Length: 258
Image (cartoon, rainbow, N blue to C red; front, side, top):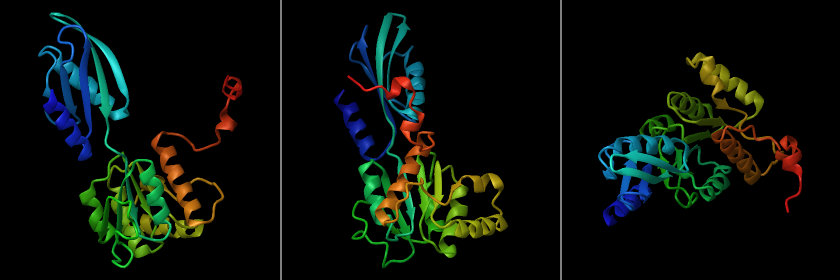
């Protein structure tokens, strides 16, 4: 079993999505099955049950969390505990500008894997972004495809420069990124939308872009803007609107706790 824990630790360090299934009661108590999101599992619980447990573990990886399930087998029922270890959410910051500094710090506190991309080498430095996992001096539209943004990825465009942000947004829209946002005023966004539409973006594409970016918190400083942006990213990730909990609380929710 030590080998499975070594594989689990190595996979988590590499950011691989994994689930660990363990028999906690019944025949073969203690047997384990390590299930990656893609590829063959390691270990085994029972040849007649491994396929079903693998499928259940991969479903759990999509939502996170854990589950305790009874599996009837040819030699008796097993109670199997599955704990999922989904990969860290990713944040790709396009533009190594001032607001990106507090944004990358806040995101690191929330467990995001952070990549900063900017073609300007004077701005895109590890010294300016010490909490980032990767700082790339590159044109964003050229660097994004290799990062393969998925639904667990937020792409935030902060450049305020059409030659950066329009190609970056077009490239991001061609991916499965779960969140795409762009900074700028309503006027800036209107001009950007027109340019993206002229470049071939569809109305469905444009609807994916959160702009002006962030929740309406009323902040003005770079750190307050960063908080508003990250708050929206978290709300979108969990399918929420970002409204006040007080506004949605019912009688039971608003009652004081003991």
